Image 1 (spheres, rainbow, N blue to C red):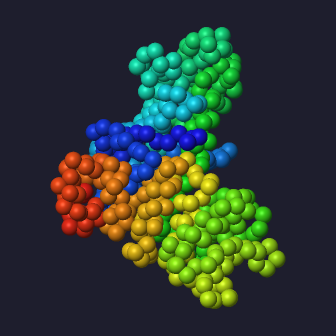
Image 2: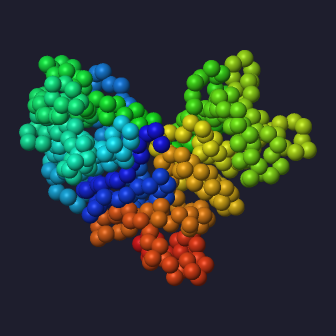
Image 3: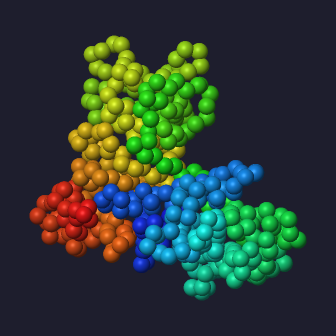
Length: 427
């Protein structure tokens, strides 16, 4: 995998989620639990980081401030914690060639008592072990607001050379309303410190490129009206489906032209749900637009998306997303089962597992029919369990479920009857 995936996540005092220890994430992650247990809140943290990184703000609120408003502003603090309070978040990425020891971004956000804005109380980027692998002590790329608000330290090469060791240089005027991950390079450029002497630069670019490419899909927000009626223009370079799905025909057209096997992959995928499918293709429509034709055996004239069932169109969206040769470093899908026939869950699960062999995938579901098909992957299932007044995701235990599995139960069966080991009833 060229980009790092999230290896561990830690959250404290964030909305209804609090963890006693970090939760491990795998390439495949299936999130289950009742409504209002925090699944969407957890996913929102990944979206928050993406918005911080991708915001192109020259004036007005910083990327952090805009992303925080979307996340909930001061309401991100657990309602049972008195203000002022602090929310802690840690993202840990796995090792790659660029960062052989991985990296950890620690954020601690200060939630005030009055109407003032949420600010960054503490931010650090470091490894779990030293960069030279000679000690278990972490190597810090930077530490900001650790001892004094607005102050920071950044690690630099001695004499500006990677083989000469490292030392810390202090920085002033570090913003408390934007991530240091974003702002530190500008501070370095405006200082007497040579940016080339900072190990931070290469790792920062690696992480930001990764996070910027994360993609999020929610079946509830995919706009079927736009999908059915839109005719995107030829020439767009899109390689990933938009969150609303309105560029579906453009993505199918581009990927089919870029990868010779892709159209056949999609045709075979659609035959698994509609066996008489002969061909699905994107073609020019009118002067510059694109549309999708769907051919069936024994019928010469094609069907167009407005003539197809909503479920078939949704499955085409998931087929293109999950079978794409251009998968993002993190693919998050909320409730993909929405509007789909239960008989199609086996196929959908197979596509999800296939994508997870190439990238990191997070899927939330309330469908026992879909969950049935992850019985063999139960270590990849995270159940949001109540802990007093809060929830925390916990991996399922094969040992605890062994008796039921030996008796022939599937995960969806246990979910249907409210087995407490996979979440129980929602009340």
